[in-house]
Image (cartoon, rainbow, N blue to C red; front, side, top):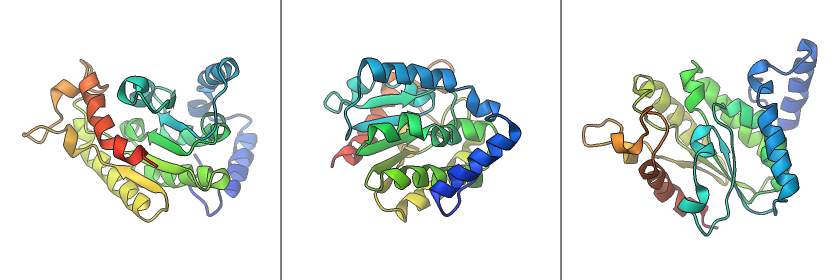
Length: 223
């Protein structure tokens, strides 16, 4: 994925040139076309009103029952499991921008860390994510949920926290961009992830896990 440049439009232009030179979109990104088509079909069947709250990112978003966590919000779920932050950047014109949301909630970076991306690379993808949204939706609020500490990926916790530190710093200096820290709330007295927050795979969350996230996120959703 082409890293953050000064202008989001320049980023997109260079990306298009790069993909054209290769003759195709990278397989790691192109594989999501089917998911994008499903979202498009949903939009045709049930058009989305502008000005809402869109949730994007990986399986932790896709599996989130938003109506249960936020019954008054009418949040739109556009998560696709296994995705990385760069995927949400590339497909922003299909899963974010058309809806003209007042707020975008993103959880991505978990799979990136697992794939060996460095905190610096993920940080650059986050910068690109922000620039892509700001290019068309300058007033939209961006809420980034920290990469979670999980049982199955505990060995990667240093990279997880390194990523969170860089993105938290980016949010702090970026207008209308907020970092939602869910690290400490997901830990037990032993400093390790609380088992009851996770399903048997130690990665995906139970209703209790999502309750923790909802509690931390809800204050940031208020206008």
